[in-house]
Length: 202
Length: 171
Image (cartoon, rainbow over all chains, first blue to last red; front, side, top):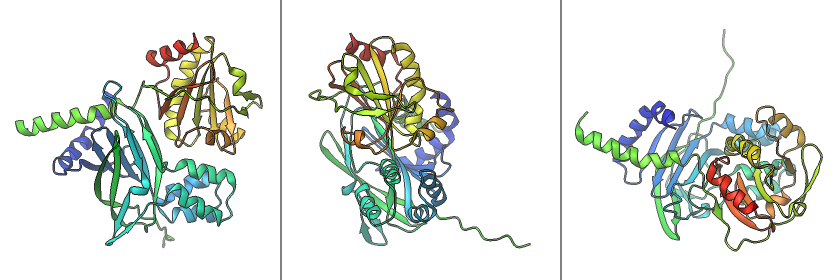
């Protein structure tokens, strides 16, 4: 862990400046594993890192889960992020963290939208020709709609947004600590742009 | 570096360190009311059937996972190390894979070699009979078949505190 901290200290130092000017304690940078932009919210007992996913990554991931090309392309036409949600309280000072994604809100071009949740995708899959194994893999790959974390609990999961590639938006994040509601807005999150390859001219 | 900035850096680092140290957690949470664990019959990747109720009298470590789940992969090595310590001490470890087939899991074990049974919940019926919403989630079931502890996310399963809690249930 000390090695990781030292390795990434330039990034951490860069984000410290951001956090010092932002009351919501949101930091941004490049995720060391994904090598893609992240937005991270650190509040008492909560850490949430939202990492951009390239459409090609999403396409390849779901293709690897058995989705055919048509469905992989369909999924990848949506905006996806990877999320790491963590209860940062300790066993000696435990607190319960809860969230409910139905309370989160996207603000894009002066309009509000909801996230595309597991339940929304179930409805989508009901109208498309997708096998049961693929639906199961998709459902469990997504961040749970509601979750309770006790001290040191955490999960990874994808979140999906009804926005075009490259869209910049604000996200209202709502969470509960020991039943008490908290909320903040993470500004200027950006969906990854798709990579469009064109033939090389000789 | 100005002293005020240095103080600021130290303060922020102090705030960040607990987040980093939580990456290898050793905390198990008691399950309220210790409800009975839902029984199931599942095949493992060697085609052997496992029935949960057959393990009554032993502590069962019941882990829900998938090969594509990064935190699930993180904890497999520590699960194997823990298994080597406790497998002869009235404990069984069952890792239930969600939605994948034997070939996929078998290929995966070339990189993540484990010796405890890897069960297959292909239609996700078993996981849906437990209060699980994300992977990995692990339950520790006591010898009477009740859910005693729960952990959401990766744990260092061979940490002495966790081993101690498991063996305490076993005896």
